Image (cartoon, rainbow, N blue to C red; front, side, top):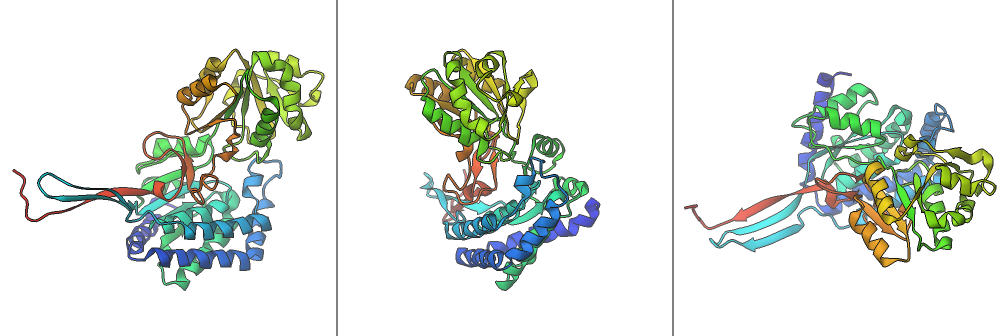
Length: 418
């Protein structure tokens, strides 16, 4: 489908965004409560559509887990919608208020962006998350899902439109574009209609959006995530942290990709990796780590690492292990191979922890915690629209405030500028 075919859709979304500001927060929240009830009552239809999508994907594909909906995940989606509905809206929030020397009253308040476009891959839950956050913050959303989740997204948008109609909202407040590459290109050129684009997916998608967009973009998603086990790290704590970060859910962007191990702790590596062996995690280790693991870790799950492994976002039961001399070398490794997403250190040494906190350049930096906590829900933001890895604008998990901008409101009494 060409850009010209999609222009009326973008126009309608922009017009719908202007109407949303006229609704109260309570009215917007009522739509979300209605949608949550529909997700529960129409669960069978959503699962049927999702099953059709799943049937076209190899279950060994790392994206399969992201694509899959289950009764439990639908219950979580409904709960998430209700949670967002109960959050305070940032719209109209006063960021600054002062009186200028000339008597002019100056206020700075939060306002919606307008029409927010989100491009994402095989994650149908994102359809609900993005809609909820956009509606609550007074934004219209233009959604561009991947072909893999086409039927799931169509079933979701049908329920969203049903909820909007039940409360008299314009259906164009939530628009699902065709799953074609042409639709992606059209969104990226929708200057004047789509106010902000947020890509959620792998490095290839994010690079394509950044290189081709003519509209503002906030980068999210791609995560090459490391954890450093320091000389002063607690072994039992490390066993739990590493296993949780790696195996809790391998397809998500906060999952662990590389374990950095202090050379003095190599003897503890077999014990540290024991929980990983139980989950059949394939380890790509450097020579020193490989030697330490041989004879204790399943041989069929041990691979000698190559340099390219340090730059991999595995999204699978695979992980790299690299030996380092100290926290400084760990920080240097992350600077060279990290993606600015999430990084962690396991240590009881406050000095090492401070070095790591202050020198690691990432949106989320953890001490004695797994990177699996990088999530809008865990941060108390409700659902998230993405995890920003860039420095300009919002950084880290993006909730309601992160998809608003600000404007100045000035009131005077006839003052003139000299």
